[in-house]
Image (cartoon, rainbow, N blue to C red; front, side):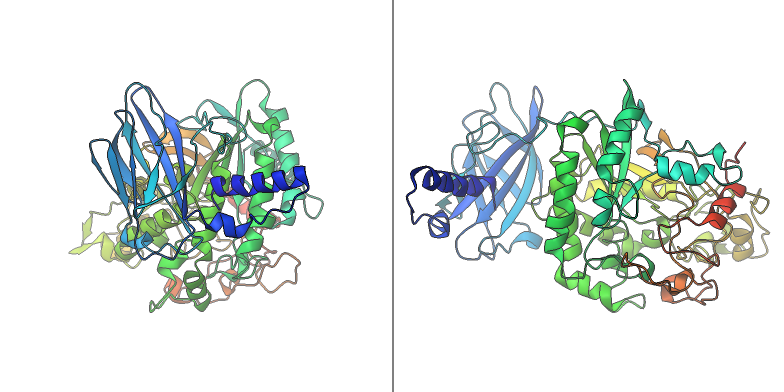
Length: 570
């Protein structure tokens, strides 16, 4: 429901309440308005602006649509996304793309654009949808368009620049309790909101407000970034049972009202307006719709369900839309990792589905500040001992069993390339990337110092690679892993920060089935005796034994991560 339509209903209710008269002006009267348009100027500077437009159709369902308006000034549309935009003089036409042509009764569609202007930049007075005049939102500051809580956004380009990062006292205490753990107990890590109960605090742990209050204390007079993982989609992680969640595949309504809405309400509290709040939005969700569906050998029936019902796309879109309304929230969408998305048939389609999600449920690309790769994964940041272009014994490195025709060897090259792909499908050109380096150091005595023997392409690659997993598809409590680069801002071109979004020492999943009240299942990929499946080319799982349920403290893993840290711990 658009804000114009909401305001109309509220006004009707107010009049009826004030006079005690029962007016017959409810849904039928609202339906008499054939369409509503919400036109919001999101950013404006001396010569240009960006705008987001949401159309709500209150008439018969449409298989295509065309919205038209005219400017009173000299505004010019220069580029756009999620609609085909054209302009003749002051008259602008926005027509559907093929993927958003359907507009159901009561349904909404959103698009955005960038424009130029000089002088004034007034909101258009009239909009027509397929020739029919709509009831138009008054634009920023208008009587039916109250400003978002917190006022206009003052987001910086890179929230990590010039800012301290929040240290979770609960994780810090766990780390400090381990032998040698005090060396890293002051490192910043992400806080995972992996179920509804986590918002208020579950199992004696701090809730969202408690973390934000502590963040204010740590902030002092400077800038501070606090990081949260938004992780509770319906049918969560359809291909990995260890990280299944509490919401069933069709519970998109509960996800919105019981999970995202309360989080948004807390983050929007003016008390926290001085914090830079980074959200990592729904890891391991959208790429599953590309790689683990349909006729692929990697397909999983539950992923087909989630693709068919659209609740991953809807959930991510809703989260981006709601959280993106908070001026000091920076949304970063999870973008998998190179060992998952780096192949040609995954790379482009994954960017496309992320664009679809970022423009669903009222969201726009302006609600996305960037993307994060390698979240809770182990892919090496940079492989230095060979390149993707090397040839050994007449074969390309891409032909090796380890690389297996992937175009990327490591996370840095993947993140930088995927950023370009995301911009090419319509995301803003200033998006930044985060790389989770919490467990991808692969140091210790086994770290290679040069390439392997040139006997074959496999000996060359296997002898030189830092990442010592059996297969890049292995993801659960990997044996031999180490802490990676410490969190830092702006470490490389296009990269906003290296982060420890996954708190080192928190398990990926249990080695055997363990009953729990968190909705988390048992996945054989966490069983060290498991011989694999098509998603890891039928390799051994490489998982550590005796692991607890995901998110619980795993002392043996933490100690190994410290032992194999790279750069080494002092």
